[in-house]
Image 1 (cartoon, rainbow, N blue to C red):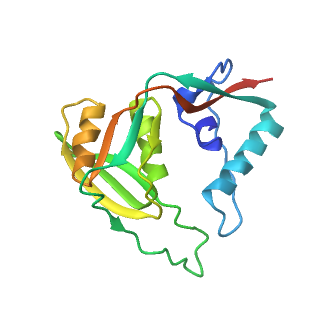
Image 2 (cartoon, helix red, strand yellow; image 1 turned 120 degrees about the vertical axis):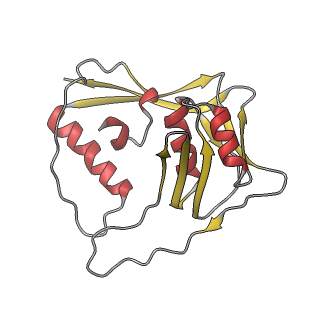
Image 3 (cartoon, rainbow, N blue to C red; image 1 turned 135 degrees about the vertical axis):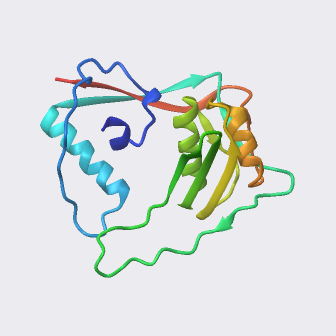
Length: 186
């Protein structure tokens, strides 16, 4: 819940004694509520009901990756603007997911996805900072298939992203984008 509420990967959340319990939260939201609004609502719920205290800090990280465009430029299909259904309460915020359609294959799929969502996916999978340096605005639809050797490594994602004209490589120097949170339940 912390990871979702604060839109932060688990590796950025530290010093969390007492957060090993499992809770189920059942809630409804008003029609057309965005993911960011739901996150804010969940933050408020955690603070009010569980007396959660959060402290933010930025740290320098010596290791990380950057996502850039290749020499030939990106080969991504621009997503069509979502058309909300009149009777639906859901908005299409887009997503990036990785699935295993076969034993030796990974499918990286983006639907109405921003480059920020792609770097967030990569950060979760790699467990370290990934900076978006593509300068690509907008939303994209993509399906990238690559061979999987059983590991989740930068080399795996590099081979997968290459077909889309994207490059992931080690970032040289300090990365100040590693904001994290410390959470304590009282």
